[in-house]
Amino acid sequence: MATLKYSRQRESIKEYLSKTRSHPTADSVYLHVKEEFPNISLGTVYRNLNLLADIGEAVKIATPDGGDRFDGRTEPHYHVVCTSCGNVFDLELDPQYMEAVNQTANQYFDGTIDNHTSLFYGTCSECLKKNSSKDLK
Image (cartoon, rainbow, N blue to C red; front, side, top):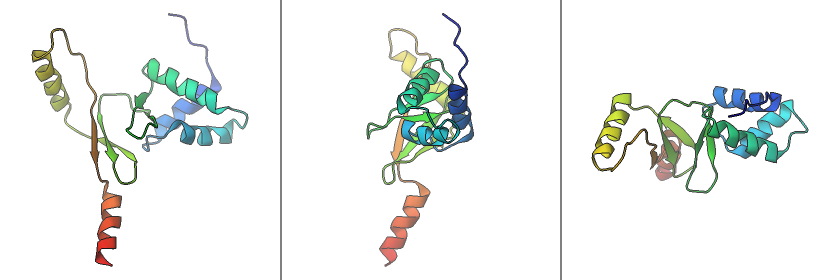
C-alpha cells in the first residue's frame, strides 16, 4: 500500500475528532475545521473522514437517520443513540463482555469472528430530565 501523503487539513480533522466526545457529523466537523481552513470544502472533509475511517484512525457510526457520525476513539467500544435528541454517546462496557460476544458468535458462524459492533438505542439523561419536567407542568 502506498504511503499516505501528509495533509494539514486531515490532521486538523483527526485532532478535532480526538478531542471531542460528541460523535460529530461530517457537517459539524466541516464547520469546526473551516475556522482554521476557511477555504476547505465539505467534500474534502467527507473524503478525509472516510479515509480516516478506512485506515482505522477514526470510526464511522452509521445512524438510523442516515447521517454518519464519526469517533476519534478507535479502540473497540459500543455506542448509544438517543432516540429523542439524536446524539450519540459512548457506552462503557467491560471489554471481557465484548470478547464473550465474539466467542458466542463464533459458535454459530462457519468461519472466524474477529470483532463486532453494536448500536444501542435509548433516551439520554438530558432528554429524560426535559421530558420529566414537561410532565410536571
